[in-house]
Length: 317
Image (tube, rainbow, N blue to C red):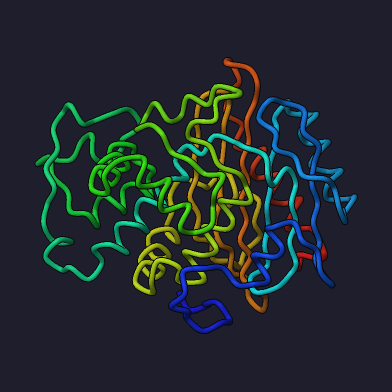
């Protein structure tokens, strides 16, 4: 990775003032904020302010066409250029939490070399569904680095649980999110139960605003320390699960450090930081949900939403 943020590393665990203003819904000169309507019990809708009608309209049409509710927050790093569509609405977080788990663990133990080289044992009882790496690993043990790699690159659910176990459980993820200023984010359960995504259930939910806030803080602003930012970027730049989601909506050349998530009720998520030649890094969070238990996950919704948002001229499309 050679393209980095244009700003020097900061030791402060917070976003830039401009990003905080923008995600707080406060518009200043040059800020662009778009908020979609509510329509379900999930919504915590903010009042519309300045909108980019073309981008907003295209997302609304995509929702109608696919029967999927979409939430988007896009932030041009270090500027007041922000696009929000249902940015404050709650969506199931699913595997997006794994970035927080890995980031919190690196912050807490990153410089303890002995810890990162010591294998953590697990048993058949620990293995849950959608564990493509750990379900077949022999012997049944993995270092913290191997757990983070499996959780972030392959969305291995057992690895996600073992990372959480090292931190003390789901409540540690909620606390870490709050430290990053993401007060609408909560994790209550373990994999795979946290993916239930029942409409109206606030457990294990976040908002596009919060996810964008946290990912920007962790990957660009060194909110968990320089080492955490470096390791998260290394793992997430080689993510293997978003080929039909956000990456399918991008045109090379680019570098993307992202994390996907998926759950019941057709939930499909993708969020990360995008680097493109000659452009400022962009943090993009796309979250979806449906109201039917038989809804099928539709990766193409995320790919199309990515193309719509990146085609926006204000965001540098």
